[in-house]
Image (cartoon, rainbow, N blue to C red):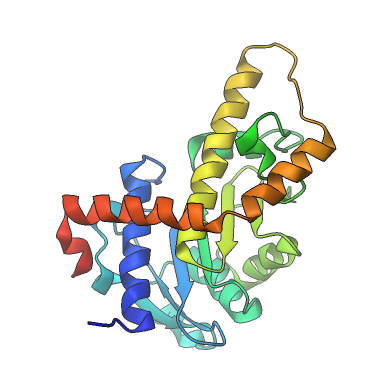
Length: 243
């Protein structure tokens, strides 16, 4: 049976949430993932307010319209989720997927006076000159103005390191976005571990870092395969994901 775009997106988005919980990258019952299902990007799916990532089923995901202000009255819509994801899907039609997390190592890097990810290995080099930085944290992002401000910071990048807060990764499909946010957390884990030794870092040259970043951009099939393997694991563990 061929699934509709919305049905397949529901399954993939639910799977991505469960994978993140399985990997310990979730934040209690907070944080949100969204994925557009309409051509203009304005109709999108998102996980409901305060439901643990590990319990989300395909049918639990909310279908929202970025142009519908009455969405704020829905009891299952988190205010911060609407402020950030609603603005993303309203203003950036090329963003089909948005994943916002507070993972330990990436968030730790975001708290530094000069938050950055120097290219010291293959994983960190993936992000060479490819991450926007927000240094204006002002509390919970629960207004459309704040959501619009965050959107404006992405510019030509698909990732936003949110100072003193966490990270936002956007993309064209769920598989690539999932692998991206997973690799970013792994890169920051490597970086924080290296910094903790107190030894000087052997930072890659700009030429090598740029070449490595471009090589990453050429293997999106690798990212999708990583996601498909993890999705299969989640379904095998608990088929209710598909409900």
